[in-house]
Length: 140
Image 1 (cartoon, rainbow, N blue to C red):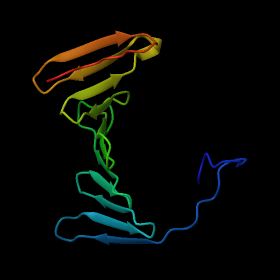
Image 2 (image 1 turned 180 degrees about the vertical axis):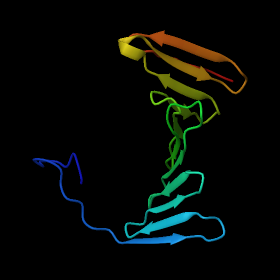
Image 3 (image 1 turned 90 degrees about the horizontal axis):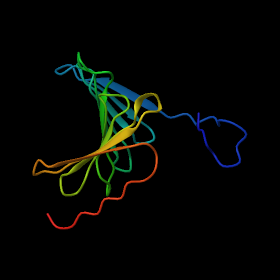
């Protein structure tokens, strides 16, 4: 179903898409090629790679023993890579200089946290309840 279509009174039926499924006997990987140019590869360990026509790549890793949920990496051409999980409420973005920005919403309406880790090991953590944080960094 397609949701959020302009002027639609509800979800629209998506058109059918052809699918070709193959299993690599040597590795056990399952490859699914769709008619809309989406390729999915699922490995034996549960890792799933999805490549879209526009170059977008998404990789999902199964949750480990101590993880709440799966970990996902998303790469979109011309944009910073995005990582989610393994905590279901955690999202991180890797900046062009290698720094990472992690957004951790608060639990039960409590204050959330923004964390920036730079490649030199320095860390900035801001705990906040609503509002806006502006950080201006100059130089290295």
